[in-house]
Length: 624
Image (cartoon, rainbow, N blue to C red):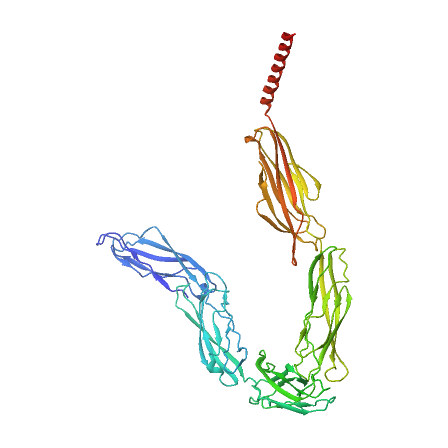
């Protein structure tokens, strides 16, 4: 409810026994209220007996301005004079006040569960969504909020004077630093969010609102860890033509057993030499558990001839996030050395494919590219040689063979090309060369052993050359005697008649929108004569098929005498693609312009010629 305010009312008449006293009372209208009266207030005296207000709590049921009027009735009392009371002018006192809504907070979401972490990690934080749910507007107090953490919880940020209807995420809760993640298990705490209605808008004191507790929790997980896998593994010796057995690998998750320990993943990794890994990958192996589902062997060994073989088998290890909901965490890999007695089969590298022979032009021919083929088996007397030969299909072609290539040796005897391609039209061409590979038995005395063939894709592209041409746009007439000789005739104009401009374009004439070279080149304007050129300086580059660049030739007749003016511009074009640049035939552009005398000058010339003819006729008559 509003308070009241005392009115200060004074009898301003002169003090003394001959001054009547002042009577006063109030009558309220609107939301106003009034209490108290006084009578026969002596001259020169004051009174605060009358109080005005704004009624009871019924006037504060909604936010906003509350107002009313108190009419103060005044009279001159006749008590001292023995005369009747005399009414004085009533005075109206306006009374107003403002009602404000308290701020109010939403129910803050709880509990807050943070993303899991591994031992030694750090929890992230989560922003709280806090709203002043009181009505928006100038008559609503703002919301203050701050947090106090207990347990292992942490809190940061505050909110001050948040307007009605507004939300804030300035306060975040968490679970402290890495000191809280030293042990696996559940970590938790509470953040008490202290709330208050701010008096900044209303000028009132802050009003405490109900505190809300937010429970914060997260879970810490042990990472999986693996034992040191036994190495080397010796599979013993076998006879020529025999087969190696395999050996199971014992892999253990050495971390503590329990629901807060991540499982161990173990998968087949990179192998070198003759080693191989077989079996089923291990997924989410529980803490304290062991698996022998993976085995190592010498599955890539040639057993046709006695000799020493070995290799390494990589086991990739990771801590699985299946239990914790986290991403898998790499634990690196362990390499197991596997040894045995064997004769090496020849082996081939992975031959690079595709082979791109680049771009040739219509009616042109493609070059060839040698293949780098290596017998990647170990060098020495226990390694068979490598044979290789090719079979072409599509537009591809192949030449050359490799016979009994020694271990670790390389050869470029086989070349691939596009000898069967048609280059009559532009476009892409391709084909395949199948490289048949075999382990040559010349060293071992055994029959050749077929190895996995490899397909090499051979690609190429046929382009049209760029095609340079000039085209007249405006201001002149362009003719050509052939594809490389153009003449631009600008016409005939009187001296001092103005500046004349012709616009032309240099085009890369469209033959194929996709498979045509770019047009580039440079201009030689040393023979430009009296013409002014714009766009011919320097070079042009990368004009695409069907595109052009614009340039102008101009002529100023103000500074020129009668006569014919000519010039010559040379363009040295090149045809450009990603495979290289080809020079094209030089294109010439001749320019012609005729200047004739001004009209007045013509009259003088014609008159002079007439006078000369008259004189000559007179002379002939005299001579007769």
